[in-house]
Amino acid sequence: MMEFTNYTFDQYPSCSVQVSAFTPVQNGSEYHMIFQIREQRKRQPHKKLEETTDILHYCVQEYLSHEPYNKAQRIFARYFLRNAKDQRPRIHTRKILPASCAISCIEQPPANGSQIALWVYLRDPGTDTEKYTHFWITERYCLAGDVTGQTLKLLTDYEKWLRAKGCSMAGNCLRTWFYIQDIDTNYAAFAKVRTDYFSKIGLNEKTHYIASTGIEGSNGTDSSLVTMDAYAVAGLEPSRIKYLHGLSHLSPTNIYGVTFERGVALTFDDRRQILISGTASIDKSGNVLHINDIHAQSLRMIENVEVLLVEAQATFDDVAQIIVYLRRQQDYQFVQDLFASRFPAIPTVIVMGKVCRPAWLIEMECIALTGNPK
Image (cartoon, rainbow, N blue to C red):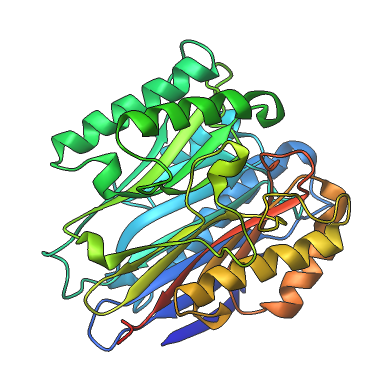
């Protein structure tokens, strides 16, 4: 059911796109695309920002104009930027994606040295259009206060927003991304606020948490310390939501003071969507494995993700997209070669983003899609 395409643009050979297409038995195909630009080292530095953005947008427009993508709904897009403060205004003035598409712009420089990369998620109309409502929100942030106050306001405001939709965080939010400036300093305070707020709304180790990635990143505004993207679904019965734990390889997150689920599998009428949280080299006791060894950490990370996928009755053959976060630029070539060798067809982007523990050199997240299991 999953098909993959790699394409390089004739007019701009520095730009390429990887595409996964999931086609269920019924209608409603889903597409994940990752557009990337190969670094052009001979280009003048002052021209890089403008030219690479223009090239990327030209290629996105061209590619999405062809069938079957021209008829698919643009659901979500995330830009990975080298300099969000300068790049975001230019991106938001473009007309390549409609107002209905949730757009996230995050300062997480592509690790290949380029200025910009883009993940786009599209979907054809399907049989469950009226039954389920999908809510994507992006770039939620505030400017006043410290990381504690900003995190609390983000969570409180999001709960109010969901309540206005007839939903709640506990009942409907299934995936979050938190981008934290200076994560080595600010993550502990962020994690405490989230834990306390979750407890207040009934989320704890006896109920469930929310699949999530907490990673270094910024929206480009200096005084904004935390940025949030989130995904929620209305109309999905609790029996169709399965939280993933991978206890043979990973620990419950709360034993080391954080509160998120390792992943979640959502069973819709004709497909299962699997959202794997940010996953690193960790063991079932919560310890970081293979300190300062990017090779061993990468392999354990992949093994951990595989365990979570199997728990959701999936494999890497079902993975539609991957995001890899690196703490050190020096590790890029090894990681690029590893993923190109093991997962050459899966749309994958590698970006610079410090993981929430300094000892972790690498983290990955992914989305998988399968037919509805019997």
